[in-house]
Length: 214
Image (cartoon, rainbow, N blue to C red; front, side, top):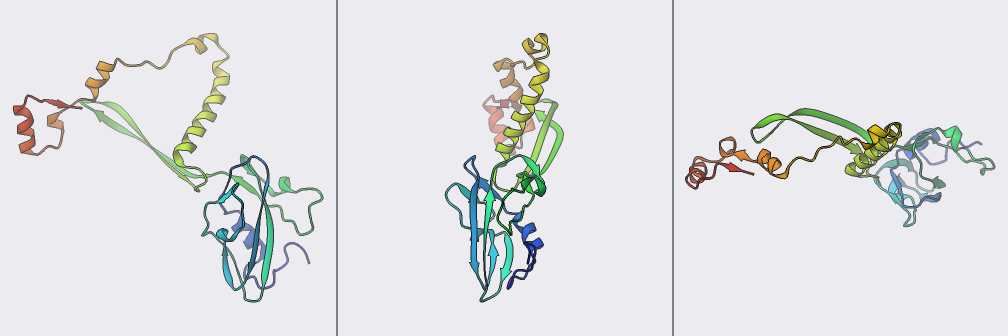
């Protein structure tokens, strides 16, 4: 017998189970390593929600399928959870002196699964020289999209600041100009002819001397 031997009563082989385990979305609220446990008895379809955790660990995709176990059979597994960044191959996760039967798996610390962006012309008031940026961010649920965007911007800014500090001129330069508040308000105003008002509402505004709305 070895760690990749067929498990009695389990429909999937160990390779399939390992692949399924890598798809579990886990959120850890502590910096230290934690152990979670799976202890099941068939017949049942085992999902990520059957994993036993404490308050420091949250299984996000509880309905994620792991394997199926037949009646009269049981299985117990202990898994180690820790925080990290990027991708760590299984070979680097091997621990010297680990118990016999321990299987090292790849660590995928990538909660963002897809990002799309679109830049298109935008109209603000009567000015059509603006651009609008639309971002589509899909995550595995362990982090919300706006938090992922903020963190990625922070990481990028911290790295680029290394180049800014190379020059005192660049460090002291002001590149963002705050527009005058009155001017901004005027840009945001829209003339009522550009709005989708009904004829009755349009005529009422005109009679009242209202030509723009913010």
